[in-house]
Amino acid sequence: MTALQGQCHCGAVKFTVTLSEGLSSVRRCDCSLCVRRGAVAVSAAGDNIRYTAGQNNLTLYQFNTKVAEHYFCKTCGIYTHHKRRSNPDEIGVNLACLDGQTPFLPEVIVTDGQNHPSDIGQNHIVGILRYEPAEGVE
Image 1 (tube, rainbow, N blue to C red):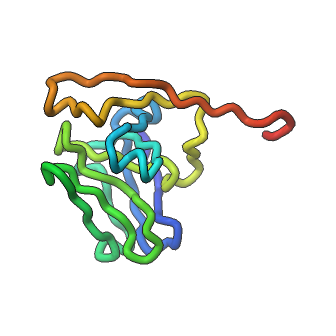
Image 2 (cartoon, rainbow, N blue to C red):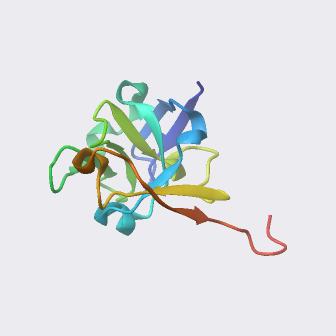
Image 3 (tube, rainbow, N blue to C red):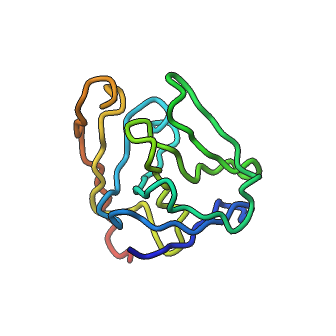
């Protein structure tokens, strides 16, 4: 497991995180919030994030059951990570906030957040998001 550096857009919030499964946990969700924020997330144990700057610049957003905790930079508004509802001991980290990483991957699994696994007892894959660079673009 490798520690990765991350930050919000403006750099006010900086952190180091160790991903549990590297990039193999990459996913999107189709719940009402994830559809609007459009982020690709990767998993880490909740105690594997260390703030190096700006933890006090994070703001919390919760909705519905208020189990999940979604964190955003107060200055630039970027979603950095969230405590997962399906496993509150884990966090989902915005892949685009990690240095040297990109959310534009060939394939990203989309999970069923409209029928949350905590409500129905299982996790469904509802699709695959594909990215294909335009011809001549590296």
